Amino acid sequence: MKTQKYAVNQYLIESVLSKVREGEIAIPEIQRPFVWDASQVRDLLDSLYQGFPVGYLIAWRNPDVKLKDGSTASGKMILIDGQQRITALTAAVLGQPVVNKEYRKVRVSIAFHPIEERFEVSNPAITKNAAWIPDIAPMVGGEIKLTKAIRQYLDANPEADEDKVEESLANLTDIAKKQIGLIELSHDLDIETVTEIFIRINSKGTVLSQADFVMSKIAADLRYGGQQLRKCIDYFCHLAVAPEFYGFIKDNDAEFAASPYFQKMAWLRNESDDLYDPSYNDLLRVAFTSEFGRGKLADLVSLLSGRNFETKNYEAAIAEASFARLNEGVLDFINESHFKRFVMIVKSAGFIITEMIRTQGALNFAYIVYLRLRAQGIHDGQIESYVRRWFVMSVLTGRYSGSAETQFDQDIRQIAAGDFDDILAKVEQAELSPAFWEVGLVQQLETSGTSSPYFWVFVAAQVRANDTGLLSKDITVRELVSHLGDIHHVFPRDLLKKAGLTRSQYNQIANYAYTQEEINIKIGNKPPRAYFADIQAQCSGGPMKYGAIADAQTLKANLAANCVPEAVMDMDVAQFDEFLKRRRELMAAKIRLYYQSL
Image (tube, rainbow, N blue to C red; front, side, top):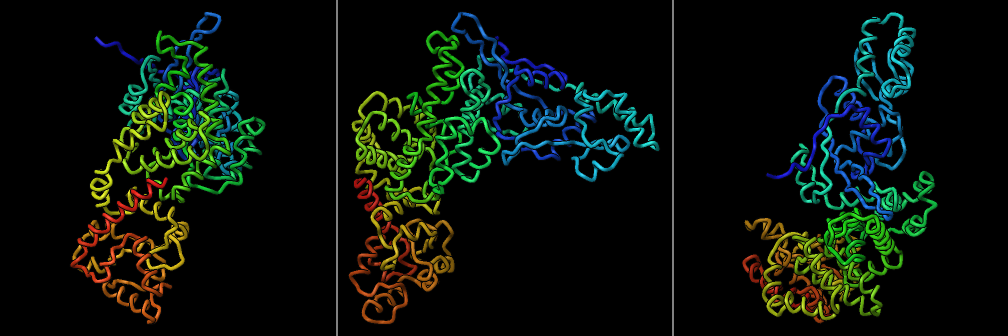
C-alpha cells in the first residue's frame, strides 16, 4: 500500500495570513509579481463574503535540514499555488501594499456598501460617499472593532436600517474567519510528482516549470541570500527587455540598488541589443549547468534544499555551498564581458536578429559552452570557433528541440569529463556525416514557412558570406535582414496560387530569397522566365528595371550566392518542382561550406 504523500487541511483565513506573516508559509513569487487587477481582488472578497469556495492553496513542505551544530531545523512550507489569492488577501485584509506588473508598490483598497452588500474597488467618488466604507482592511483585519464600525457608519448614515448595517458588517468581519483549503505536499516528493499533483488539482491546468520550483527555493531562503539572488535573476531578465527599468529599481528598491548585484547589471541600462533576452528559466539553466556540470533543474532544487545524494539526508552545509555556487553561476551569466562576447560570437555566425533564432535551447547551451571553455582557459579564438560550431550544429540537428533537459544533462557531463575538441568531433561525426549533408539536410529543406530553422541557417550563411540580396548589386542580405527587408518568392506566390498550388507548396523555403522591396514589387506575379528576360536585357544595355545589376557576370555571381540555379531564367510554373529540387541541393551545399568555415 502506497503512503499518502499529502495532507488536506482547512484553515481560517486569518490563520493562513498569520502563517505568512510569521514566515511559516513562504510566498516564493513564482508568478512574480502580483498580476491580478483590483477587480479580481474585489471579486475574491465578494466570493468569501457570499460563502463561495475560492479553491485550494497548495504548499510544498521543505525537508528538515541538519545544521552544522547537529541540531535540526524544521522546514517551512513553500506556497506553489495560490500566490495571487494570498497576496490579494494580504492587500485587502491586512492593508499591505503589493508590487504590481510594473514592479511598483501600490495599495489595493476594496470598498464595501453595507446596505447593498456590494464590494467595489475604492476610488475618489466612493471615498466621498458616506454610504460606502472606502477601505475594508481596518475592519476585516481587526484594527477597528465591529461595534465601533457600526456606530460610525450609522452616525454618517442616520437613515440607514440599523439591523441591516449590523448584519452586513458582522458578515464582513467574518471574512477572516472563513476557511480555505490547504494541500500540504510531503517534502520527499520529487519535482515531477509535485508538478503532476499541481496539474491534476489546478482546474486551470497551469503548468509549472522546474525553473518555477527553483525560483521558489531561492525566494523562500532567508539564510544564504536567496531573496536578493532571486531579485537579481528577475531584475536582470526584466532589464534585458526594458532598460528603462533601471531607473525604477534605483528609485524604488534602495536595498537592492545598494547591492553588488545591481552594480554588475548596471550595464544593461544602455543596452538595446535584443538578440538574447533571457527569461529566468534560461538564466537558471545556463547558470546551473555551467557551474554544477549537471543539466536537470530537479537536481538544483535538491541541492538548494541541502540534499546529500549519497546518504539521502539534508544538510545545511550542502545547501549553503549550493547557494554559493549558484550565485557564482548567476554572476558569470550576467557579467557584461561574458554576455556581450557571447552575443558577438553568435552574431559572427550570421545570426544577427532574434527572429533568426528558432530554438532557445541551442542558444542557452552555446552560452554554457562559452562559459565552461572560458573557465578552462581555452584561447579566445578557439572558443569562438567551438561556440559557433556547437550552436549551428544544435540548430541543424534539432539537438535541444525534444527532451532538452535530458540532452543538456548528457552533453554537460561529457564536456565536464573530456576534451571538448574530441567531444565536438565525435558529435559531428555522428550527426553531420556526409549522408546528412547530401541527403538528410536536402530532405529537411523540403518544408514551408519562415519558422523553419533550416531557412534561417541558410540566411545566416549568406550573412556571414556578406552576400548581396537576390538581384541586388550592392545591398547585402545582412542589411536586408537587419532592416526587415522583403522575403521574395522566386516563383511569385500569386502566380503559383492562380496555378492551383497550395500554401505549403508556394511557401517552400527553397522558393524564398531576400530581395529589396522595390525589386519584389516590380516583379509582381511574373514568372521567372518573364522577369529574367528583362534582367538579361538590362545586362545587355537595355533599360534598368530590377535593381542595379548591369552585366551578365555580376548576375551569374548573384544567382550563385543566393543558390538560385541559372536554369531558372527559362522556367515557368511547369518547372517549379524541378527548380525546388535543384535549389535545395545548392542550399544544402552552401550550408555545408558555411559550417566548415565556422
